[in-house]
Length: 230
Image (cartoon, rainbow, N blue to C red; front, side):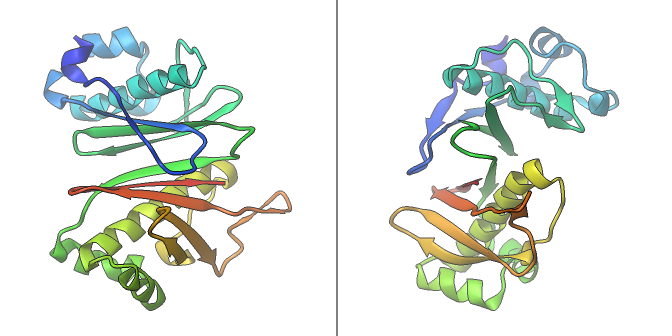
């Protein structure tokens, strides 16, 4: 039954990332309550009134998270949920992202990274990019990404995704939310596919230490994949 719902996971490789990332495609139409009970068990409180499509998304992330943890050497029977977020096993940290029928999960060990954030987005259309760009990109970022060879829809998609990954990464540490223009992409290496960020607010300080987020990205014909670690 699970194989009808979710495809065999496939590894996604980011250069210089000392963790693992897998993706899987899932079919909402193949979701059943029986599958949920079999692989998750008790329905988390935030899903008690959710429709089957939302539960299907949760199940896809839960299934793939267990798979990736096992691939990382962490054999877990369940992943608790608190405040709508997974509670990763001791010694591990991870992040989940979904885009239409695709789910992706990144997992790494905490002796290597303090936190991680993962995001997958469909490349924006010209119309969506125009609408989103004002809240995602500042003029300096537009110039930087244009000089790196990105067209307008791709640069807007990349900036949006990278900042979403950064939000996720920092939220797991600081539990505070920020806006897209709190952060600026101030360096991009197209060869190594890495990104660096700058902030004009006190975003990167945690328990007296200055955090240095590092971004990674991959782009195919239809999607942008970004990963941020500290």
